[in-house]
Structures are given as C-alpha cells and as structure tokens.
Length: 396
Length: 164
Image 1 (tube, each protein chain N blue to C red):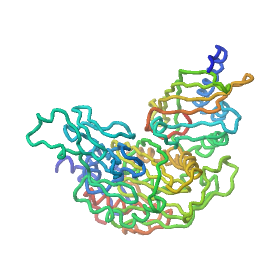
Image 2 (cartoon, rainbow over the protein chains, first blue to last red):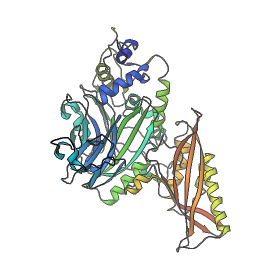
Image 3 (spheres, helix red, strand yellow):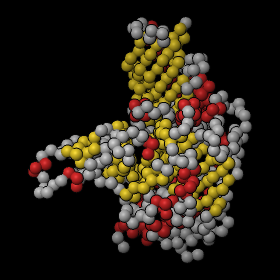
Image 4 (cartoon, helix red, strand yellow):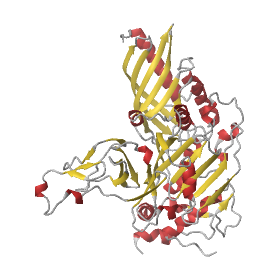
C-alpha cells in the first residue's frame, strides 16, 4: 500500500452514520488526497458571480485550493474563468484581487492577452517553433457552467452536468440569489479561519441557534421551515419563514436586524453545497461565501454580498449597512461562528469520533428530510465524502 | 488648510493615546468616549482594496453614534463569553494633520496592530493600514467626528471582535 493510501489503512470509519472519525481533520496525507480527489477531481466549485465583474475588462482573481484562477468579463460581455497562468511558461498573469484592464500582459516574455483570453501579441514570434500561431495559445480554461449568474468550475472531464450535480439544490440556490440571480455586488469580507476545510463546511451552513447569544438576548425565535439534503452530494438547505425579533432596547440602531419588504415571500434560506459553498439569504442580506482550503488547518473565505438589480438606492444602502454589521466574520449574529471553527479544529486533535445527536432517530440509516434545527442534515454530506475518499464503513 | 500649533498637535496625540489605551485595555466605553457626541459620529473599518474599487461593505460600519454605542453592547454584552479572547497592541504614527477651512481637523496616521490570542499565546500581526480621521477640536475638547481604519490587508487573519 503506498503513502497516498495509508490513511485508508489507519483510519477506522465507524459503522454508525452519525459518527465521524476525528483523525480525518488532521492527516496530511489525507489532505493531499482530498485536494486531488475533491478540489481537482469530479466536483463543481463556485468561483464568482457574474455581477462581481459587471463591465468589460473587469476581473477578479481567486484560488481553487492551490490552483490560481482569473475571472474576466470579455469585451463580448461573456464572463470566462481562466487559469491565472500564461500559456507560454505559466507565469502568473494577474496579481491584483480585482480591477479592470483592457489587456492582460505577462511580465516575463510580454505575451499579451485580450479580455476574452486570446493571445494578441508576443515578441520575437519569428524565432518560435515552426508553424506557431497565436490562435493556438489562448489562456487555458477549466470547464465552466453557471446557474443564475453563479459560475462554477471543475478540473475534471468526468464531472456530470452542473444541473445533475446540484439536483434539488439548484432551486434553493436561485432562491438565495433573490429568485432570479439578477444581483449587484456591494462588497466583501475576506477572512481566514484556522480550521480544516471539512470543519468549516460542516459548521458554517448548519449550527444550532444556541450558539448565537443575540437570538437569546433579543428574544428572537426561528420560524417554521424545512431542511433537506440532496441524495447525490448531500448538499443541504434550511428554508424557514423569516421571523423578526420583538422591539428591543438592547440595541439603539435596529436597522441592523430590520427586514425591508422585497416583494417576495418573507423567508430565509441557508444553503450548503458540497464541498465548501455556503450561501444565505437572511433578513435583507444576500451572501455567497466563496471558500477554499489554504492548508490542512486553514481556509480562506470571501463573503461576497449583493443587492438586487431592481433595488433603489435606499435599499442598496440598507443592504450595505446590514450586511456589514449583521452577518459576517464580525457580525452581530455571526461572529461566534468563527470562534467555533477554530475551536472545533483544536478539539478534533483529540482521539475518537465526533458524534452527531440532534435529529438522529436511527444511527444505522441515512435520511434526507429533517426538522429545521436537526444537525443530522450534515450526514448525507459526510456519507458522500466517505465514499468519495474510499473509506469503508465498519460492519455493524 | 492651516498648520496646527504645538499645543494642538499635543491634543491630537492625547486623543490618539486615549484611543489606543482604550482598545488595548479592552475598555469599550473609553473607546466610545474618544468620539464626538454628534449623532453622525462614525467609525468604519474597511479594506483598502474595497475602497479603491468603490465598494462600501465594511468589516465594521458604525456610521452613526447609535451604532458606536451598539458596538460597545456587541462586544461587552452580546458576544461576552463566545469568542476566543485576544489582546491587541496598537502602534500608531501620525503622518499628517491640518485644520480644514470648515474648522475641523483632518489627520492621517499609519497603524500596525499586533494581537496575542489567549489560546495560543503567540503574538501575530492582525492588521496594518491608515486611520483617516476628522476631528472636532473646540473649547478644550478634542474628539473624533469620524475615524476610518483602512486596512492594507485585503484578508483578515482572523475574525475581528474589537475595532482596530
């Protein structure tokens, strides 16, 4: 058995669906295998919403694990995802997080690309290989598909279509994106968490309201709703009626938790896609969290926030003020999440299994419909991960 | 724009040290006391990259005095006991100060903030950037009308509990 597979020999995956071996958060060989199987393998990964690059020449750079990407809106209006690497000797093309350029020039040998990724100039061409033609050397692209303007990429030719990957979660994703995906970027929070990527994705989408003291102190009860997971990847979604807190003297500026009518059903949605995306529509905050592993015990999360194209300036300002202070890495009702990501990772260095409890009626069976506060909705996601990485469940 | 006197510069330094002492001592009410009573008094913490791209979402957007007061409530009451506590050390260097035509002072300072989490005990860089301030200095009082902490780091190395 080679080094890549040592984790399969060493780690014992329990028989019960609600038990997760903690060693998977700390094995370097497993982490490398995850990068290959999940982040470079047959999965779809969201990298940008088209509204982040609204004008021709607008770009943003990002990483899919260790792979550098460059997202550009072309002069033809189409948004494309490229590898952020020159098609000559693979020098990184763009270094800024975002901006606007007419053309993208590699500084090393001055190869020049237009906003559609085509090579339009390269000095000393007469000395290149016989038959060299610029049209054969555009910036390389990963496969890409989109839903509601949200661009996904995959580095594998074997990944099924995005629709088949998302299953029922596609409708939930559209709901998060205001129903039609006609969004307008209003800003970002970017932060690193000292946790394994699986601990982040296991705890950002679902976690108990008990974590958030603001809910308790504001006497703010959650509304009725449902939670489901897809059968394919274990994407899960919590959809509830939006409830609002009682009038309070605890805080002076209640606009941070005020809901303005958007002309749509008053609901809230939190969606977690395998492997790492969390997107939510809560109060008037539309948030898509682009997350990627940086190291075995570190993730980088870019919280992108959006308004709707039809919002008037008052509504945009309300969303900016609410998104900044309510739900984010320093938000009134979410700062605690960040602390838990760190603490779960530290606790996972202890031996044994993490054991899910709430909503687990029968540990020997996997369900796909849950009550809204059940932590068991994470289990189909874990089951997909287990099978994808090749772990065998211990016989009951 | 007019040059400030040595006494006026000394008042700015006192305000600056009061601000630093408040945050490094985790005394949020003392932090609040460095801001003017004006209902429009504000504190904003935002990354430079976002400012340059015209984006207005901020890590902390306390754009009125009520939100400054709420910031104290968040830290002292609502979040109490939920976060991994850390201690900061702010190092601040004034690089510009002058009196504007409307009588208010504008000041720019570089900042560097080191933080030491209780759980690791290891000091690390939390943020570097500039404070861009508008200050009311009248009748012996000197307070921030607005303080904007613009971070050079586009990415925060962890979540922020306390203002920078």
